[in-house]
Length: 270
Length: 366
Image (cartoon, rainbow over all chains, first blue to last red; front, side):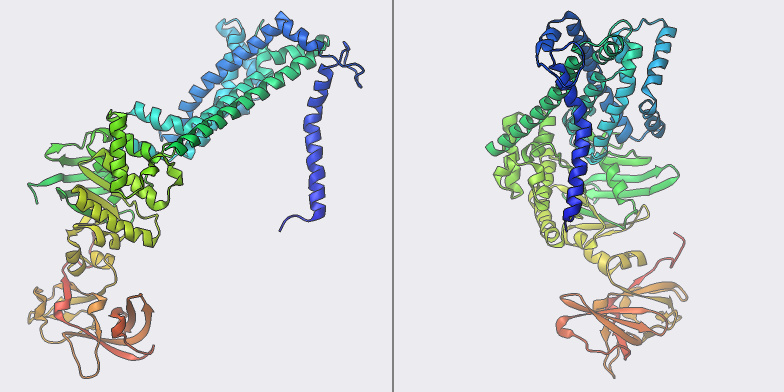
């Protein structure tokens, strides 16, 4: 039996309110980005896309995007590799210090990022390392690699150990098993871990703030501009940043869909 | 069967920490044999098979394959292959890719691989268009056949089975048991099968090895194990049975230890003689036990109260409780149906030829 009519109406209103709270701010940033005015005012009197043109032309904006992208891509790649092996250690193999490892790996996630960023900065200073975007990569990894590990570990838990044993029984070496069995089976987990890693790094502010030194990422710049002097480039870059994340997710879905359709068409051929 | 043994185990011991799973196993497996290892869960049969394929390390003892020691050889270098309980079909591969996997590992060319996969699909009576099908789209019985085809593609010296039929429904299991036996005959390979189902073992095997607490209790053909078990454990494991405590009498015959049984004459049909005072167990299967009408007698006679009957399909089972606390089981074919009313006093009997004497330390410390 489904919910009654009054319950349905209450649920509908509840749903609409939640969606409005979540997305209305984002929509208002979108509106702000297409305002002609130099200052943030509502309602918007005249619309223009000139700030988008300015943003894309500006060398400093290009640098910002390049830095953020560079950091996010390296963090993504390293998280996927580290996460893969970490997940095997986390979920697949029984070894002496496994439970300790499982607990330690969770710690950075529960650590407040501000504190994590500060402590890393102090640590870099102590070691005499000058903070740049490269130290930010390290800082992001401290927080994101464990998350990637957990995402892949969830996939690894649902994996029948007999599959690897069967492959070995049929003559496969450890490297072959990894390539032919383990890696393909964990691939969905690795891809979603990669997506998460990219999005978390691309949008990260607290860790970047402490550890980028003279370099600046997009979220840092947005914050600095809001504090030191508003520019219509702020909502513009905000929207561009969201669009970047969105495009990445769409790309991932498109690739997944393509792989699936190739697979089905191959099955139909045979 | 010593010179033509393909696999020879000597004093094989497996320990997990303080727990000993296998206590010095000795076994010779003959070339081309279908050997089934049966035992309750925890008896060590799975551990044994994992040692044989190389998935667990041997603690002590030797494994020889055609005279060559292999106990230190890793699983991927042993010429043996196992069909897993879960089948372990690779879910990201098609049926064809699964079957070709061992050939691919060996570096066989794609064309040859495909040809062999097609041959195996035929052999296992799977349609050729299954080659490109996803494993998930196959039914339980089909997946079973794919797993078999993949194992045969490996072309092992010995094929091991770890209860692969246990997850299937009754009907399908019966069909596949017969197919497996047929496949054994057609390929001529050595099959070693483990199961906890005695029926499965009886249908398929040349020899059955009964395992208990990390040791072999008895290794023999099905009929031998059923009719002449070496211990109460084997007797009870092999289906319904009636067991009586007996001791040797001065005159060379038997006497019932607890008065449950009247022994007529000296029961010399048994073929074995107990020393005076020696304790043993007298075994009779339910189908050899009969209801005695008044005035008739048998070598051994017991009386009790009729308890009830149970339908077994082709047979009917009856239960009778004796005054000394035994619950006796009798089985009759449908056409020989006995009509009794619960609570009625009945007399049961069986002859010495149908009985078997088990001589072991009774309830002994094992």
